[in-house]
Length: 365
Image (cartoon, rainbow, N blue to C red; front, side, top):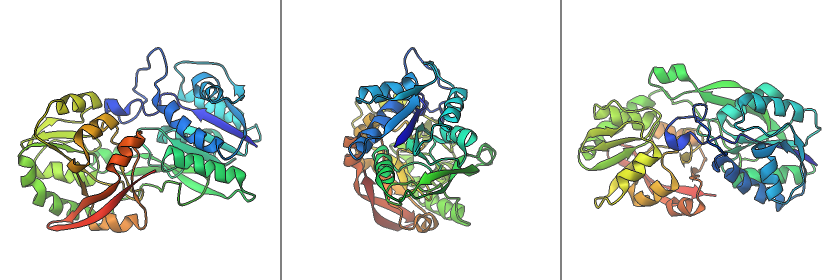
């Protein structure tokens, strides 16, 4: 079995900086550790179940990690740092001719779009989630889940795959105050509902009205104390109910009803929480159709920030229509730290309307 590996070395690096993507990230002298760490989680699971022959990009684009794991890959291209989207597309085009059983890529929605441009539906492709934005339906629900799905696909006698959507944030809709995904095309992806992420769904008709009613009922609670309010249309309604010029896709900090930090980065959140005696509250929603609460679109909430807050700080806002649209999808945490995921896993209080709530459960991989 020949398996391709392509790592976008800067995937996810912009998240803690509140960049909402990594295109504007300024690489230093060496690649950040995030994308390689997420890839390692997936590959350790995969290698426990099968032993493929690897084809990969040079250096940080796959070679370095595979050699560190004791593999002897066939290497395409030359070492380049920093690498570019053009490098990704060029390597994927080369891999397309390598008779691969599966191509694994490590990144986010931008990397998925590069895959779409270079390979289309010519061969099975699976994303290991490492990006800031992860709205596409071609990713595992976590790195370990991606490793399990890849191992099962490669070990099976029947390798089942289907076309899955490649989505990215619709900038035009964002300018109109809506968090909405734009469809770019489809990749052919191994399938197993246990391990594969769903696509981000559109808000149902009337969802904005439900969110507004819920937000106005909660506004008095946010006029005292420290509050961190995450991204999304449901939580944005809460910012609007307070009359704040908040961010639709960022983490905002509200102190005694005033906007203290808009679109805060990880370092500012960490600094804010240091030495504070009074508890802070964290207000989040789940991604429609996917169920992720942590680890998708709110990267400034890093493991150390989440540990400082503690799970008791979390209140989940989910309108009835969004809850219904989730169907049987589990609510998930994927912060990048197994210890923090375990800390937040378990029952969580979800507010669904004025004086209405439900007890739900967060699941960690």
